[in-house]
Length: 75
Image (cartoon, rainbow, N blue to C red; front, side):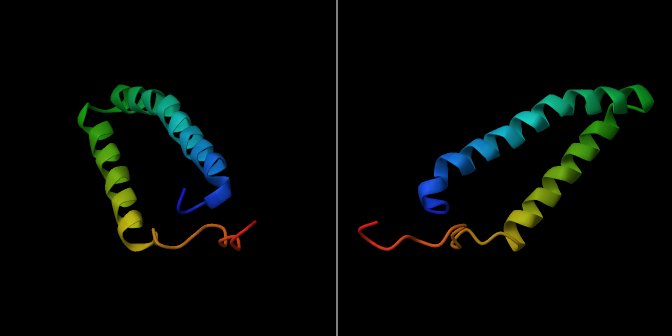
C-alpha cells in the first residue's frame, strides 16, 4: 500500500498472478529437467533463479520509491 497507493489492489493482483503462473509452470519444467538429466539439475536451476532474484531485490529495487506519485492531500 505504501508503494502503489490507490492502485495497491492492482499491484497485489499482478504479483499474485505472476506467482500463480510460476507455480503452474515449475512442475512441468522440473519434470522435463529430471527426464533429460538428473535430480540435481532442477535444484541447481531453482537455486540460480532464487539467487538472481535476491541480487535484483538487493541492488535494483528501491523499496522507498513509489510506483505512482503520491496524491495531494484531500483528493
